[in-house]
Length: 182
Image (cartoon, rainbow, N blue to C red; front, side):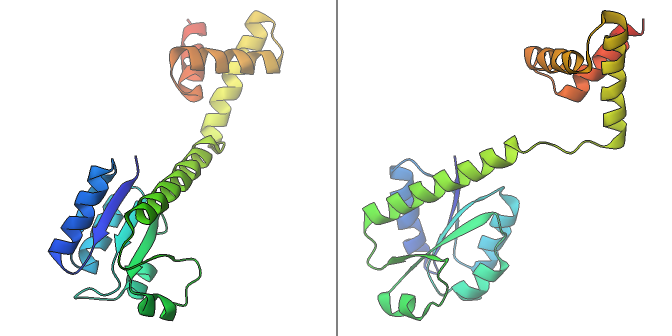
């Protein structure tokens, strides 16, 4: 589930937006009234969405957007006048007064994008260190020598054992080495 930070200068406004989102099943991780509070929370959380007004006691939305970690998205809620002055085409904006459906649909879409981005990052192949490559090669060589397997068969065997046991490939390669060296 995507983390959401709500930031409005008036605690009452922030609380109302939080209640609305929670009522509709969203996880609101934090409610803030200053940009510094929101930045601190965004740096602690892995990723998420910041729903905010345009002006806070310590900064305005453009300063906050610049300082916001790259793994956080921003939804700016402001009057049409303020939004027309905003020159950032990549900023997601919602006009006041808030239309509940617009806000909820926007957050849904952004949460799906974040989930897809996380999935892509998880599926990206990991870069192995020289030590890890050496261990994997040793385990494959041992399997090839003792069980008369090809390199591809040995690699598949280690992969299958890894998936079956729920351990990562390197742990499985180490187990193969320790078991077969007895």
